[in-house]
Length: 486
Length: 90
Image (cartoon, rainbow over all chains, first blue to last red; front, side, top):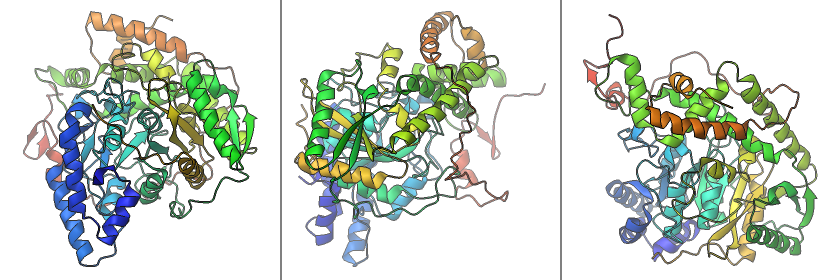
């Protein structure tokens, strides 16, 4: 089955002529036909254009053209990333009919690599959520256990990749939205350093925290996809202008002498014993390979969650003010005047979670409260950044759980926003501090669901993260294992 | 802390009936109680990344790849190449 292979394996096969992109794309769509009714990963399928693109890539290859390693590989795209002429809904009623007139920079870059886009994948509405249950379109199911959530907000991306309905996917991460679903589905997910991937064409949730990143079945695939999407962009003022290596070529350096920091605050009472044990077992395995393990402290971790919800909601309230029913997206009917048009369109177009975040953001920025909430949160953010900087004087990477527990059942937490928010504790600090972090599988819980190990590095240390993650993957005997879907 | 949910909703240009307002008010109070727990620390947040400063663009128009017609295709109501909105001046 072609869809079961990694992108790196498929890339080599395509190059040697052992399979064609048409065959590969067909294999992915056959898999979609088989499993999508159970998984519900996609919100829009693009079979016709994908097959046409695959044929075009095969023709280019037949002419002997020099092609990118990603040429002809099916990569699903999260539905908050703009794709010219293809529905981009953010899984919201607000954008139910939105066809962007332009491509996001990451899509433009992947187009230059001749990627094949099988379709757009489901997410929590406007990326607000950790289970994909906040999608206004449908919930997505975890392919490893259909009664459980795939995580979120990039739940569709994760479910598509682990079911074989795509070879790789793009997700976006504001507080854990790539890493947590990667952890819940047993995948590799990288949240890159803030500024290393252009946000142009990513529909904004919290602009100072959002980053697009790869979700894949192997570390090498993540390095391959990240190499293709990173880089400076004139159209994103927060984009870092610097040179990046080929991250695949940087792999294989081993972990001898690597200093791994273990922050005790990430192993608190909210984290289940099985998660702690699996993460520490992975750290021990790296230690046996020559890594040095040290205990460190990041004292502001607990309060970070509060700062995160204040800052991200404040930015969301501003960013989502643009959805007013005037120029694009949903417009309510039977309106009386312009204000009524705004209020009705927004009230009917947004789901409850989005409304909660908009109202929280509006509250923390409102007159009389912004000093007590927003300004204090921003000061705390500076302190958290400093704590990480100090910690990285003593270690090269920090190892933590990605999520305090494994994937929960659909519907289990849906009415308890506070419980859902608290579960983001291990991932949000990374966004607050603009750092890169990768989640990789490190065993399973008693429920058979995957556990994720998060490796955090200093800014622009993706090369180190990939190297350590890849080394662990080899020790663990490879990550690319697709489940039976039943 | 009690919050005035109707005032917040008005600022956010959201509308809700009484039952929804009650549910949101109680959820929002719980959320605000949680996030209010911030340590007392002194300092000024600059938020600037000095190693990768933001670049301001020159104030010159750059041609867009999107055509006017493509942009208007997304508008809920269009007449004579313009977006239609309710009357705002009596």
